[in-house]
Length: 565
Image (cartoon, rainbow, N blue to C red; front, side, top):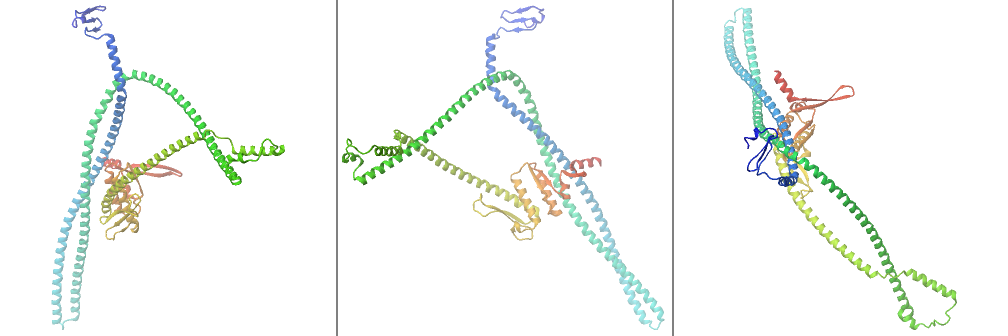
């Protein structure tokens, strides 16, 4: 059948013995193919499975997209760092070549000066020999003068004057040779010091070149690793795209279900609002009832006090209880008790007294039971509050213990970094940090004790302005080495420093910046600091009243000059 269906003409079909069906347009149904209902059931099961997997797939897609964006950002950042490192390495190599050339020229100059020294030493020796000869000749002439005292006086003076002039010229030549030799010795000392400085600079540049090569190697390895990771991440969105297309139809159905759920939620929220309103009204009624109960209790207390006072008054006046008063009363109710006005007055007085006493509260016992129940609830709440306070105090104590441990650990790290950086910035000495004013680290203060080279150990406040600045810089960098932050702004930290200390601070700043954990923004007016930065930003006023921000990329400028050279 598979070989014959291609020869079928339009409208023709082919059926095999096992029930397989072929049509001329390529449509084929196998005998073992499931029926329509089975396919629908299978599709429904797949749909339910995809609905369950949809949140996880969406989460995976979001994670993959974030990872892709992060990898792309890291890739761009690493490329920029690689370019900067390569530029720095080229600058180091150029500086190293310059130092090598200068070193070679100085060695040639040194050899030439050695030859000049030998020549001057020969000249000095010859001059000394001539002086000795002249002195011998002078002695000989003196002897001749003594022998020829009777000779012509004028000839003697001329000969003596000639000898003196010759001796004076020899002495001048000897003095000039000695001065030339002293000048040369001084120049040789200067050149030796210069050669030593160049040697130190050469060693420093070699170390920087080695660090730059290691950094480039590390960046290349990270770039290769990230490139592989980026390729794998680039392929993952294509895999997710098919699943996303399959989920588009299910999303609309889920949106409809979400709409129904939102309607149900709105109805439930309305019911909750009505219930809350009814609860609020019930609370208001309960509050009024509580106020009425309090008023009734107050009236009952007043009535009981008045009743007790009346009973006490009857007992004091009549020496009997109020219940016994009718039995001992001599009043006959059937007889005339007096005029009507006096009786009405007594009645009104009694009515007023009764009104003052108030109505009898028949629910006093029930209200007292309710109050006792409420008091029990308040006592239970008080116990809960006391327990919560104890738990809070225990939690605060644990937090304080952990905070002390973390503070002391961070203090030790910062102190260790500070001691090393202080010695490096000052070229010697020692310094340390100390917690003062309290035994509790959380309540104690911080004191800096420093001992620059050649001085005694003392507090930071007793140091000079420049020394205080250097110690403060060491402390700031120590904290950044312990817990780096993404960015650090330094505002004219080099203002009180001389050129040598500024150079040390810049070396330390470059070393920390090369770690890549912190980017530094330095505000400065010092030429040495600006020369060591990667990029400069300045404000200029090209026109009166109009300020303009100007930026210069020093590394790019150096690269441009190298390419132009």
